[in-house]
Image (tube, rainbow, N blue to C red; front, side, top):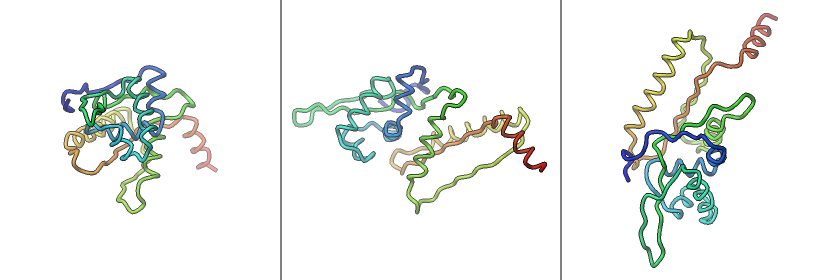
Length: 182
């Protein structure tokens, strides 16, 4: 199955699916499967897990519908299964008030574990935008991510792109303005 045969988006809607994607190890397994199918052994090697642990996590992802077997082959009397993502992208529900953002938490963990000598582009900017500017910037960021995803070549090294465009809680802005006034 090629990536073009995959549905565009898998919408996480159940607790089982949310638990499956919330785990950092499973998040990393899905990253391995993002561009090409892999066996349990290949996944274990890429993620740095024992085969048994890799198998356990892949089974949970499969049960949640996030990954699936896309082909099998016989190797010395054993059926080897190749797993792939069930869709090109996964959409998580917005976290409720006071709940952690799973996607951002996993992205920060990946960033913290990236090699210290690797090139990284990390930027945080505080902006003041109209509703229209906010919507335009969100659309441009999504379009840019989609453009580069279309250019992705599975033979090249992995690169992660994460962005968050949001309005902070109003109380924080009011507290900052009070602090600035003092």
